[in-house]
Image 1 (cartoon, rainbow, N blue to C red):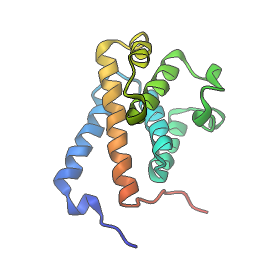
Image 2 (cartoon, helix red, strand yellow; image 1 turned 180 degrees about the vertical axis):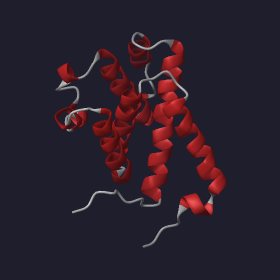
Image 3 (tube, rainbow, N blue to C red; image 1 turned 30 degrees about the vertical axis):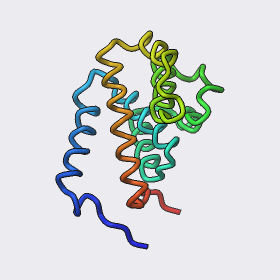
Image 4 (spheres, one colour; image 1 turned 120 degrees about the vertical axis):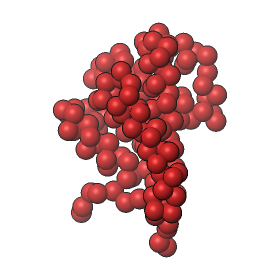
Length: 149
């Protein structure tokens, strides 16, 4: 079934979501590679093929090795490949994306706050929220990945 092109049907809505995306990719002090790593992990958790494709490509362009990228879903087991900041961002991404299960626990917040300053933690959470919103739009309206067979 063909689904609506949400960008065309609601340009003001697309503009609003796009503004948040623009802010988290250009208006924070978070490193670009970290932002794309968070985008990838959130998209994996949500199962958004379109966004997984895009953010895998972004991380390769940022210089992250394919070996590291393929281990993002199991980063706990390959923690030695990820910096302290990356591990904290991945953990907080999982906590916030699964908020209906985790309720953003005090322990998880304290762990993230131990690595990120207050402003960066708020910006990281906005980054997670932005990707969760985009994933929900991408999945709901079946945006296709660019990958070819």
